[in-house]
Length: 216
Image (cartoon, rainbow, N blue to C red):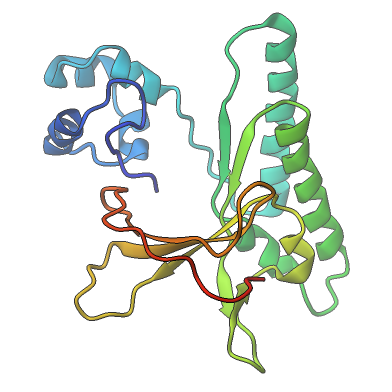
């Protein structure tokens, strides 16, 4: 669930975020579900609320629903490109593991094929239609080594062009919203770069030194 923050759209300042929060609007879902005219009157918003109102949230609880949504979106985007109208800038799938994991393992032979079909749909949006695609994936621990690994395994690891590991901080003094952010795969940047981030404010209080050793 996306938390409203300064800079999410042009002109959305920290003061405006606090004003919206005082009206019970604290997340992107809260805003897109609210009455735009009523929000504008109460908070003095203009185009800022309009920019956030363009964010659409679609609930899909299995891979077939996700595929249908992506295919419909691909058709819509193709028409927008042809007509030179405003296009979708980013698509977020949260989370891919939730809809794919139930299909993997055991006798469910078609699970891998459906996962690859989903990967092709996402890559088509990114490559052919120029849309940024952000996908979240769960982490699990290897049974033998105990090391963290992506929930969908090695096959899915080849799908994203850039991969970022978001992990909790175990120190007692760390707040519950602080995370370490590590770049583990990138076509342009060296891997192993790590920073601290506060997901409550999306700030970076300090930059950590580059991790030593190779990252996989």
